[in-house]
Image 1 (cartoon, protein in one colour):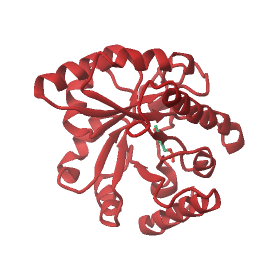
Image 2: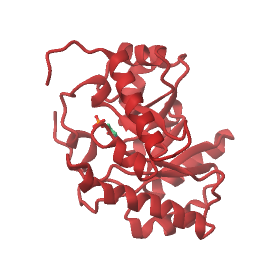
Image 3: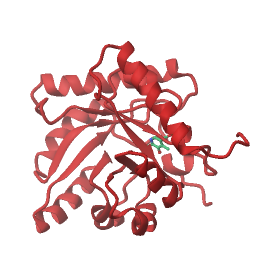
Image 4: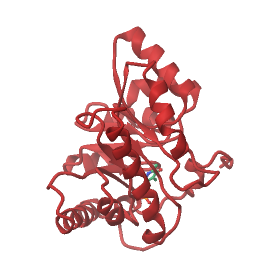
Length: 249
Ligand SMILES: *Cc1c(COP(=O)(O)O)cnc(C)c1O
């Protein structure tokens, strides 16, 4: 951890530069990768500052944080993605705050979302979270079950599936994480090739974080989710957000 005061504008410029350079180097179209700010534990005024600097997309892991920050963020021009583990007792509230849920990985949650959406005549964009690292502690459905899950989602027409999301192997070495990202892209392309979902609306690959966004972009990421590189180190370990066995903090 550094002693430097947080300079959001500078950090954002560095991250955008990393994205731009990788997009250019890999020959992908400009604007083919969106930056999502992973804002867990970040104070809403700091998030508002990033939005004022031109950021368009944020993601929260807990519905409670959406609610707490809502008074500051609700009228700001930003899209809000839910990227955490969704519990059934939070389905009602997440619909108040989220423009898109990236972390759909359970049929019962899909059904609960659909029931509420249907009752209010709304649709919702969702992405399917895949456990590409095969680690037991990670959320997301198994790669081998994604096709089946997409078939099941046909029962819930208010849910518009726009892509896949993954956290990937938890490792500081991007080359160790790469196979997770390769797998996610492969799954998306297979789903399209098998005509399970149309390429026009099913295209997003949300993958890549502060330490490995270049690798993710090389593998086809369309959304990278970045927290630490912009807002600095968090006080809670990621296991607090990512694992089934949540420690009591
Ligand atoms: C925290 C978080 C990120 C960002 O991680 P950093 O390493 O801080 O960039 C991305 N995705 C999810 C789901 C997260 O919880």
